[in-house]
Image (tube, rainbow, N blue to C red; front, side):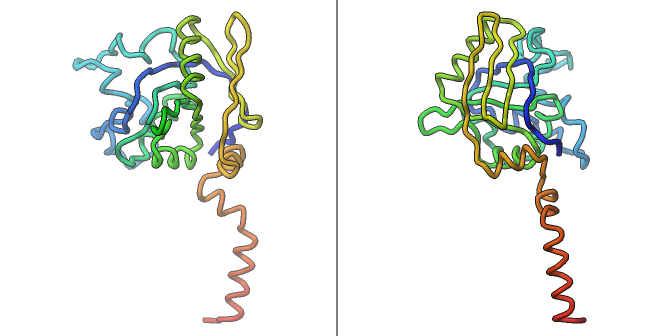
Length: 209
């Protein structure tokens, strides 16, 4: 897992709430036992027409969103099943961050999707509804709008032609450390390898086989 610190990328917007994991990666694309090749199937039911050609009406097929690496969407993103493939598809498409709003009691992201994302290096950012609406409006007004995501200082900086807009975000300190160090579950365990080896050596002397 690559460390996540600071990057600048183009913003794409899908202004829809309750985007579930079956819409993110539909079940017919879950047959592979490999963890690669899912990016081309991201939002496949929306991205492609019945004849297999790109759907010109779908947001990510718009020219202004080509090669975007920051996705802004509606609340309750990633609801539905627990399939980890949804995170893989988003990451392999090229998105490094997904931004969504909390709306009243409705979360920005579904819990299982949120946990899967952290374990796979995908940064999810929850903002207030007003902030997300401002970002969506800025993207609509300026084609190719970019932003810098600074995880260390927990800031999103938009770079519109009219000036700079900055949004602060919160993140659990343990998750922040995990992302900045690029640690998956195995990597986290390996941080304590010497302690584990010492324990195993001690255990072997105390309880020889």
